[in-house]
Length: 539
Image 1 (cartoon, rainbow, N blue to C red):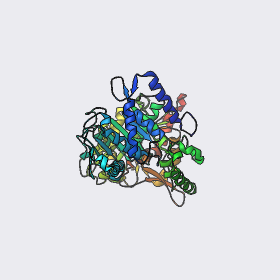
Image 2: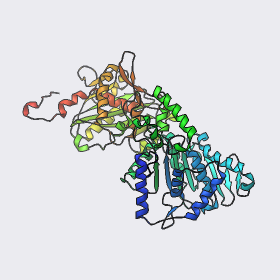
Image 3: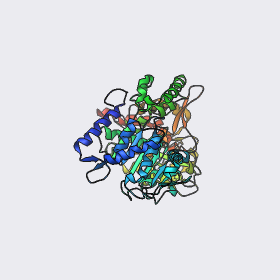
Image 4: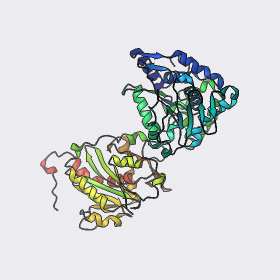
């Protein structure tokens, strides 16, 4: 990397500094005999490791602390498609099954969200054994389901995506293939709780980027970038991050080695990427996978998205309770059916920032729950949603919640926004807290598509200028990222769902409803300069 022979990304140079500093400041040793023995196993494979693979392999498998523990038990490889992730994984797992690892019963499981993907590296090892039967049969026993080293009693398995079948393991190592496909931590948590029961526990994560936002990959990538920038301790994680520094770099093919350090040695891959790049130039929307998976640089803005993912993440700022205490607010409610999801929240406007506190109710009998990937029960434990074990969500729940949350902060709700088609079901419950769209009250606004259309530019600007404060609410970020801006043939824009069954939007739409009535707050958010600014209100 230091030679400048090939283009490397910022994170690769940070990795150089990081590794050099580790060896300069810590007492470590490399088991060179072990490493040489490992590398000698390349003779059984149809390929030799690239330089970057040897680099990762040595640090992950043969560098130890003074107390004999592994210095980098967790390896995160984030490279573009075609770099050879699965070949690397197959070689590493083959090595660790052998006596060279020095551990008996060192079981290895490969996990992926699809069995075919989980089996890819496992199949590579199986094929090696088949190709060298005469030599290997005295050291290994293998079937279509399991590979076992007879000298160490270590077993090698590929695993399905069902977390219920993986509990109680005693793995020495777990692998996660194509980490980008995971939408929650259910399988990951179950898979990793079995490690630590045998010596030298390891974890290897290999992946390109993908289309899931806000999931484990984004968390792992953020952690890796923080490690490389020195913001957080590494705690044994080796982050090998390869990507374009900026999406505009894609137009200079010399930069393609940034996401794929194997590219200079793979002319066929270069040819294939040339073809894909031409398709990408012709139709970037239809060929986004080139940027996402080849370049590890997802587009900054998804076509039709409510906001860029970075802008949605920027809402994760703690709510300043002192700032909103005693301040007027407005409310928003949204739901499709009371047998599904229902979202509600309160919005305060203080010093140009919109603070939003929300809650979601989930009907436990909702038939769509089995389709939904995020761990909703985890979110319930965080207090941001509630499962309702009934035939439907009682309409009184959001109304009582709005009243209580406003009272906690000594705030008065000036107005509530709700979809005009959903109002009748909540009409009586809203009236119980003195809110109604009827004359005499006029403190509930029935939101129509035309109201959304007028508000979308303001909301888009709010995201772009980081004016929304939602606190740490993964439910809100998920609902927002599930939404899209739909443009009619006449150019009218409204918010809609990206996918109706598995990607709910209710709590974000409640936020939109609150924004649609938020203009009433402007009279109260401006500083009072003199007594003539005070209004008189009679109730």
